[in-house]
Image (cartoon, rainbow, N blue to C red; front, side):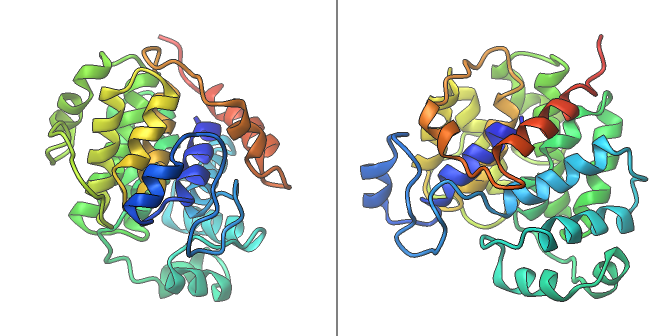
Length: 281
C-alpha cells in the first residue's frame, strides 16, 4: 500500500498541474520526470507520502488516537526530513511549530482541499467501517475540518479498507462509498482535477474502476491533469490492496524512488508492519 502510494505520488509530482502537451509526451512510465517548473528531484516523494507515513507510524505504534498525538506525528515526520511539495504556508508553519500542542493551537483547519484525503489510506487497515470512519474524521479535522474535507478523507480511507477486507468487486466501489459517505463517488470523473479533495477522490475512484493493472491505473491518473500526484497516491494505495488489479509497476519506478533514511526501504518495512495488522476474516 505505502510503496505504491509513494510511487504514485513521486511519479505524479513530475506532472502536477503541468501543461497538457508535457503530460501527453512524457506520461509513459519510462521513469520519473523533472517537473517543468517545480524544484523536485525525479523520484522524490512529496507531502502526500510523508503525511501518510506519519499516519501509518501512529497506527503501527498504537498511539492514542487523539488530535495532539496525530499532530505530533505530522510535526515529527516533517521536521526530521523537511521537503518541498507542501503548500508554502503550511510548509512555513511546519518549520516553526514546536509540537502537537503548538500545532493545534496555531492551525486554521478550515480547508476543503485534498490534504486530509491524500494521507488517509493507511486508516483503511482498521477492521470495521465504523472505526475507519471515526478515526479518519479525527485525523481529517486537524487540518480540514469542513464537511467536504472530512468526507473526501473518509472516502479515501474506505477505498483501501474496501479492498483489504474484500467488501465487494472493484466495479462496485463507488456505490459502496456512496452508502457510507455523502458524495457522488461513483459518478465518472472527466477533465482536469482541481484542489478540492472530493475531486481527487472522485478521479481516483474512476481511474481505479476503469483499470486492470497498476501501470494502467497510474497513467490514467496522470492523464486527468491537475492535482495528479494526489489522485495517483490515493488510487494506487487502494488498488495495491485489490486482488483485481495486477501489480505490474515498472521496475524503473521501484528503483528510481528515493531511498534515503525515509525512502524506499523504510517505506517498505513500514508497509509490511502496517499490513500485518489486517484482521483475518
